[in-house]
Image 1 (cartoon, one colour):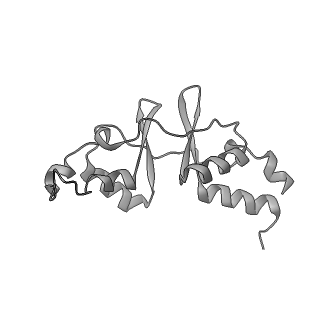
Image 2: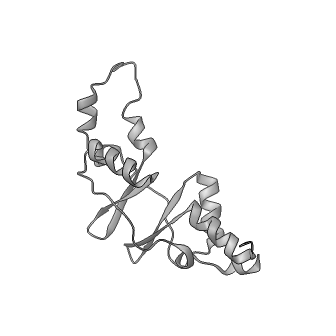
Length: 142
C-alpha cells in the first residue's frame, strides 16, 4: 500500500484523451457516448480544456419542466455541447498524488478527472485507472 501513496496522476493517466468541442451537437455526442462507452469527455478549444460534458449533462436536456412538458426531440438533439457542458470542473495536474485524485473522485462523485499542466490537457484519470494502480501497487495481481 505504501507504493500507492507515492503514485501520481502521471503514473496511471491515459495520455491519449478523446475530447469534444463546444460546437458538437447532442446528436453527435450521443453517437460518441455509444461508440466509446465513456461517461464524460473534456471539452477543448485548441489544447485547452474549457469544460467537461457528461452523460448526465446530456440527459438533463430531456428532463421535463413545468414550462416544457414534452420537449421536441429534434430541437434538443440540435443543441450543442456549449449549451450543456460544465465550464467549472475538477481537474488535477500530472504531479497530483493519486491519493488526492481518489479523494476528489469520491467526494465529488466523478468518474474521471482531466489532467492539466500549464493550462494544457495532458491526460485523464478514470476510476478504472485508480483501481488498476491500487491492484498493481498492492501486489494483488493474482
